[in-house]
Structure formats: C-alpha cells, structure tokens
Length: 255
Image (cartoon, rainbow, N blue to C red; front, side, top):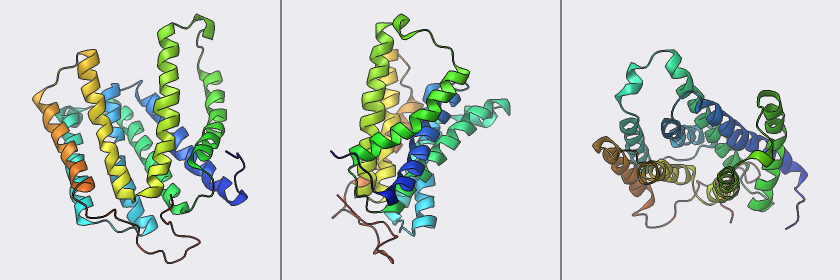
C-alpha cells in the first residue's frame, strides 16, 4: 500500500493518534502502578459514555433510545463490577481511577475526532502505521528519561512473547480494526460494542489466573452483555449517520 498521506489528513492523523494511542496507553500504564489492572480496565471502559456524549455535542449525532438504554445498562454493569469499595476510597486512592478516567476521555475524544474527519483517503492500515510512528517518538523519550530496563538480551522468553502479542494483536491489529469500525458504524454502535472487552478480561483472569468468578462478577457481566445486545442486536438495518449539513466537514459512512 502507498504510504503517502494527503496533506490535509496529517493534522487529523496526528491529533487522533495522540489521543487514542499515546494519551490512552500512557495513562493506563501509569494508572496500573496505583490500582489493579482489572479495575483499570473496568474504569477505562466508561469510554462509550463519554464518546456518546461528545458525539452528541460535537458531531450532532443522534443518540437513539436503544443506545441510551444500552449505555445505561452497560455502565450499571461496570459499577457493579467495580463494587462498593470505590465509594469508601481515600483521596490518595482515587489518583489511579482519575488517571484511568483521563485515559477514557482521551480515547473518547480521539474516536470522536476520527468520526469528525469523515472521509479518510488513506487506508486504515496506513493511518494506523503513521499514528504509531508519531506516538513512538515521545514514548521512547519518556522511557529513556524515566525507565532503566535491563538490556533486551537479558529478557526472558516469556517477556518477548508477551510483548510481541501485545504489540501485534492488542495494539496494532486492534487499533487498525477500531479505526475501520468507527468509520463504518455510528459512535454509539462502535463504542458500546467495546464493553465486551472487560468481559473477556474478567473471564480470562478467572480461567488463567484463578481469580474467583463471584456472583457480583456474573451479574456485572450479564448487564454488560445485555447492553451490547440492546444496541447491536434486533436492528432491522445498520444505523447510519444523520445527513451531513456540509459534505466537506461532517462525517460520512465510508468503507
């Protein structure tokens, strides 16, 4: 594929990459130093709420009753999964959740801006590649400043395996598919569908790490699955964006 990107797309490409890739992943990394990874994942996936509200305010995208219902059900599931411990947390204990909330807001804003751009001339693979290239520079600088990891030659085989899986599947492939999905669906459909991710995380932790699958977790997962079903199932046709008022500025469906 040609790596050339149209001049007018560079600002959009850079800004959306900084929000969806650099801002989100950097905040998540720091948040995991303060709270368990499972809690970080749960809070991060309040993102559909913020994206839906941003799309309503910034894009004028219509939020249908089915989407509001699915959103409310999904957020209820996340609250149940987080549990009552968050209400009794001390101020210093809230720093981690606040950082994760910042990650969710960053991802949501970047997603809305991807949709705001509308028609992208470049292929999602090319867009994703350039976004990672742009975001790599500040991340490498921060790593050199703050971190002092052992030489790569001393890394364990399991470290290389985990890093490779994370980069290829969790980061590159997932980001490319996410970019493609956002441009095919409405913000409500694409963002609420991400609620399946904490479900996978909780079940994987139970199967691979032996974390208990309590009644609280089961109820939360059922609520999250119900949220996805409300929005994604039972549609007679794929909802499309409302007719744009300006074809050059407003987003449009583009395969």
